[in-house]
Length: 401
Image (cartoon, one colour):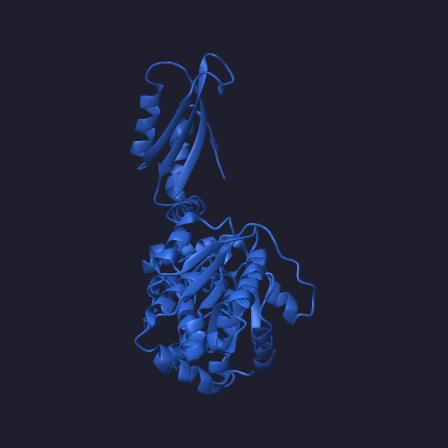
């Protein structure tokens, strides 16, 4: 069943008042870093923290009276689960969500908090999906697929509808891509409203399933990724068909670029993004020759990132940027040495934020100690000045990468 602009416009009418029409903002600091004028669609501000509400709300609104009575079921370990749970509850429809047993407790609790019954089954998403289909057959539930469904796809396309209504001058759309529902829905809208407008999907290196399918290659995916929301093996057949029809290209970005994008959004735009939500910006940063000087739009399509992971990403980015300096020193084990080192760091303008002093096990001699310092600095120039000040005191200094 094809999806048309009329389907997406009808979806926009159905979800109005149920799903937030999120702001589209220009972020000057992000644009400077990217070398392009970047407009961010903040779908991380949705009630569940992600764009998935668009597709879920539209698909549920299409249920017949009999289907509403029967209830719905979905398989998801994240944002789709919460979206279906929330909008089913708002409509008075019972919802069952099957999640793999490894799903973090906070996601289970949030999904239950939106009113769904959660069933934990299987070690993988594929096993959870198979169980969800079995329950649907057994109980007559309506299965709400996260991306391979025309109603869901039309709902996701409302994101591009809003972007192009507010910024018709956009020169490209860049959209995170997992199963393909979002990028395919937006490609349909863009092809009708702005024929010839380039639409790009974005995947991470470990999970380039859509890029592989479009190229006619076997799908080979796997490995850890911070962009777990788009870590998909089995892409949707309907999205795949629509991307081929509209000639959308899928870009593949390294893991490090996603971390960089998360940090840039947090520091430069004061926006919290999960890995999948930052993938669009990661592509703009990774392919500057494709977007330099152009006015481009990308959604921050999810903000459900674990605070610990966000903290680690920000610290890793500070290290990469040279704004955190980590040093190892072998020092004489005598009074006054630590005070001398602290004075040299302070006089060079550094701020010591962590100290580890080991004198028993790590030091090469009983007359020495090993010192590890974490120092906050402005930039690499100041970091070099601190190292030079320590070396001037005859300390042997080793930098950690």
